[in-house]
Length: 431
Image 1: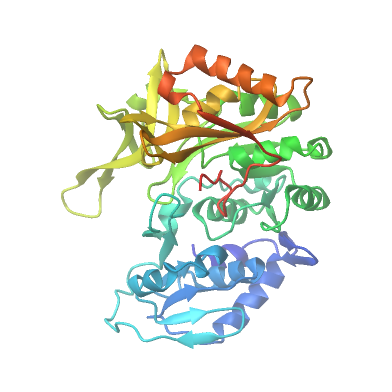
Image 2: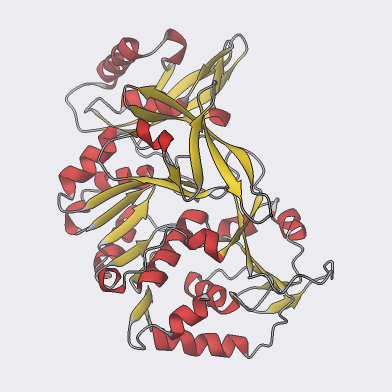
């Protein structure tokens, strides 16, 4: 069933999209879809969907699914990137759709296979290099979506991601498939404004990065929200954020999800503990089977069933993990390691240790160039209200780190800041 068919079969008066003053029912959305389809876009078209208005962009996306050969979902921030022209070239787009117009592009006119369903092209975040285009099908993107309408109609999801990033798209598709109301927040706004939008929309389900959740808890306004479902993803989830969310939202179910643009949704953890059970290595998930390399990286064994003789492929997720007893913990991204005199330091691991201190609200660990060692470890700290001076708190942080970390892992420089910057994907910015 295409997305437009999904809308068509929803109750006409079901409220599906809220964006500011816009409150769109299934009937209103489908009426807009029919208008879009009157544009007579060729079935062979390969679309670069560049619409900035998120509500309008989603309606276009729904209308184009099953109608055209491929859709390149372009996040607002990606359009400003110098990498975007090359990505659009790689996608071999024949048309670009913006807020103002539909533009026909010069592209390779090789006839596509129209027996196949619409291909969805998503861009990776590019936080550790040049963004890449990852092809998906509607099936691969919705394989974990729940379709229980009775339960789904009890939820109102908030969207604090760009809807055309993988994490945001997952929220959109889950809401559509369960007939939940979706409230589109202003992702460029500060956390206080977003909280106001969540409250005004009566949002009771939210998916966000651990960094966003910490900002929300730091705001002092979290108590005005009433969540029934909390989902975390995109960054390693440590015990401190899980405990803080449980203490603040005691009635909410808390899930942390391992997923990426490349592999889709891997697995979910719902037991309230950081990491995941070691016996997950003995299970097969919809994305494949988990393995750990000799170097401590998480691998995913996937099966290609599109051929007569199914083949297996090992994907390197780039995530470093460590097993302790019957639990496996995420340490961080291998590509983000800091090189201190030939010794590898994982920033997320150091951050997790520092966050154990009650005087620390948030922390980001970054590299700093050094002529002798190559790089040094630095830490920016958002401190809680405390009677300790900055000097005393620095000493406490260093002492705490010495008890758990090797000498080269301990921050050589510690700076106190008012706020930790996050990037357009909601993750901590280490630039």
